[in-house]
Image (tube, rainbow, N blue to C red; front, side, top):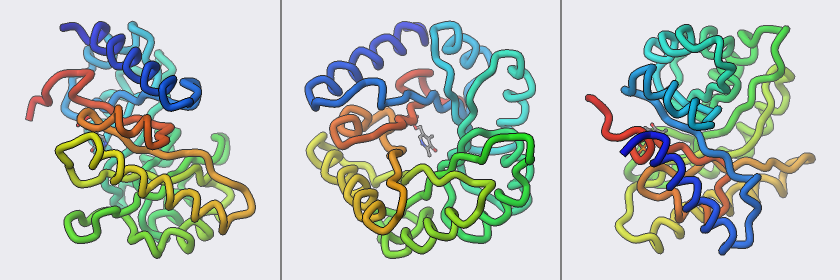
Length: 228
Ligand SMILES: *Cc1c(COP(=O)(O)O)cnc(C)c1O
């Protein structure tokens, strides 16, 4: 199967699921996750119409961003954030989904070049506090959100999570719906409501569309198995 045919199938599934859930497909963006995939995979998806791509590691992202500058891709950073990479990330990406500390938010803000629009930011939430290490605890979301909103170089957009794997679509839906509820709770505490839920990967994107996702981050279902 080609990347183009996989993309078409996934987009049709998203459309069908969105319609059944009473959602507008325009509110749901598909992001191709290209870690451990070659530049040619990105070009192929781009030629098939995909415009948004995500990477997890700066060193790997840099090679692809440099190779593809002519294409006008919107790049999303979704990996762990180290202080010494924040300058490069703040200059080369349009979105960062994985902010979970005030210090990292401060660094991204101070390094965002002034000729660029504010960096779009999501707070990564640790939904399964017993099993996963990355993301803020749900009780810390409001504090971090208010801090990010005090930084003019950043634009807080919403929440992101990677729930622990579940076997059934019902379990996936329940897990993902917790992030939807946390966004509603956060919006009750903010002057301007946020609109973004970054959730849904290759194994749970159908449940994610039902649960309210606006940014789907899909890797292997689109590009095939990762090389490593
Ligand atoms: C790798 C990765 C994805 C994509 O995972 P797939 O299972 O290949 O769809 C999405 N989000 C994050 C944060 C990732 O690290």
